[in-house]
Amino acid sequence: MSHEHRDDTGARFGMWVFLYTEVILFSGLFILYAVSLAKFPAPYSIASHKLNIYFGTINTLVLLTSSLTMAMAITAIQRGRIKQTLMLCSSTVGLAILFLVNKFFEWSAEIGHGIYPGSEELAAMGPGVTSFFNLYYFTAGLHGFHVIVGATLICVVTLRVAKGKVNSERYVLLENSALYWHLVDLVWIFLFPLYYLIL
Amino acid sequence: MTEHKHFIVRYKTFAIVWALLGGLTALTVAASRVDLGAGNIWVALVIAATKSALVIFFFMNLRQEARLFKVGLLAVLTILAIFIGFTFFDVLYR
Image (cartoon, rainbow over all chains, first blue to last red):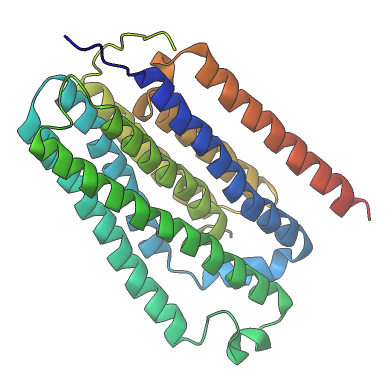
């Protein structure tokens, strides 16, 4: 019998270390937001009212639910219920796509109103509103990119579950993809109230 | 690293956490419609921090991980506090 070298706790810790750096990455943007909010409180309030609160709230619920299905997928694989695992992973990917579709319609509407980085209409609204939307597009864009990466990762893991390479004995890859996915949710938990809900 | 055997978290636990997260989302939307002045942003941040704690400890299962994972998170949050603190020392007292 060959001796197998593996360290699941170490693998998960490696993922956590990566996520710590992701927190620092997004924090830079949130600090920039905080500084600009302190400088332009009134324009930030005006700009925030131009965002669609319904899209924001629905997308928050979509992401929270996708985190739930991903967390449940780990329970399912630990119990050896492969079919359930596959269903839960696919639901997560489905919700990720729903999030991006909402984002597409939301951004299309905003761009249709002439609100996008570098537009003359936006520049006419003054430096405060411009700073809000530049940061909004950059932060939400980087977040959207994370959604795409996370969903791709989950697709890869789902295929490996289907092939039996990820199974009830060996599922650290599923755990790490889930950790990444929850980070995507965490970023949105801060992004949503800060950008959509300023009175 | 030494292996910790994790117990399997029940679906019900995750469902309860999800319901709490949904409730807190409703709360943050409702609270944002009331004018609290500068208080609005702090209420939003406190609710977001609470939601994050639920995601981190339950969905990400930090509660079952070794102490190293928690110390790492604490270190990141400390660095972040210094980062924010020093930025505002500069910006607010120019």
